[in-house]
Image: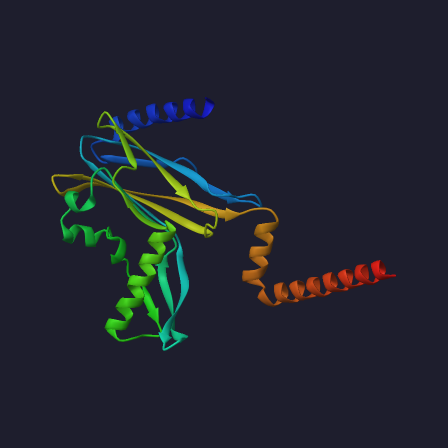
Length: 250
């Protein structure tokens, strides 16, 4: 109940904000929170983005996660055997890409504007390493996007934005449990008659807290120390288990 009351008060404040700033800023969007904390029992999160616009129009919201590097490999059948069919790294691709809209994006903006704002799921620029012939790189690229869409990390949804009275709107941003740490961007477009008339960019941080943050920092900033500590811990665990086993046998 308190949470819903907070959202209603926030929405009322957004209306007043837009009325005061409509001349210069026809679109105002604010994430529910500035950060998401990953703890030991983290099982995903749901972040809401609230907004207000100065007049009727279509909305497009693009949520982009920090860049990632993914290794893809495949096997091909050679007679009765399966053998390695190649291995590549896909780099500079967002770890998460949601495209939300009030209608199918293709019916809101022409192709040129879609490309300008990066509003095609498979139009995201990625780098394939090692560099391959265009046809081979295209196959790997399609495979990457198909896998990301299957995982639910890349998706397009024209029913995710709820608009109230052509003024207020709200959307839910579901975040998976294996969320990547970093900065997430929320880019919102207000479109009228096929033209972008309002543009807003917001951010929220995904961060690790507690022991998870310490482990992550050590692993990334002092990899040699992390390796030494991990090796020592495994050795001590092995010695302890060996001692327990011999004691039980006696």
